[in-house]
Image 1: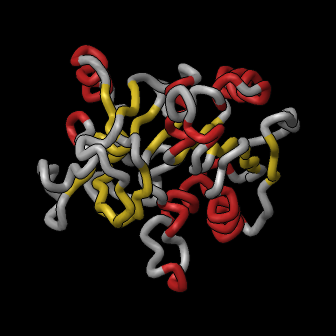
Image 2: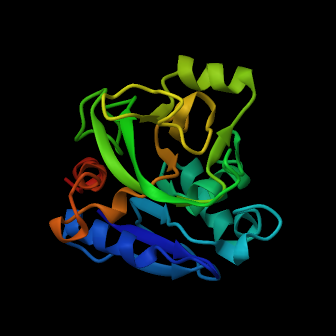
Length: 231
């Protein structure tokens, strides 16, 4: 699997993502700056977390206008796989590659803590190593992670099986208490209609080694490595 990680001014999670991809694939991903062009032959493009352009205007809004995002849109239109985590999710939404919006957390406070997610759609390139309804732990670190969309969009996401992950409690139930940022219907991550673009707010890349405190997030990267490996 040939992957590339894109950084913008203010990105700060690229090294974590690089370690996660290398752990799962055994290969170093390409590290690209927003002024670069996407190289040919990629299987996966990743937009990692951080505070691109200082979160001015709206989180991800300025990064979505960066030159490299034209290449990302073309890559996605050709059926390429794209993963956006935290600020990367915000950028994907601002670029129009995923629906909805990410508002200020319901508490109006920055959240830095572990959360638990439930896999709502198994069998995708991002989730094939999990069973449906499996739960796993991941850190969250965001101030604008409150996923919002109108009812018609939410109903479509639910009806088409495009909700990838949902915030749950330790019993695997999607309770209000588990939904700390206030996201609509406890949604933590979503998929594009072709299941090749995934965006989520928590950070699975920060739990891929026992030295990090666990390997709960590793199945996502193993899923990508297995699905996108060259025959």
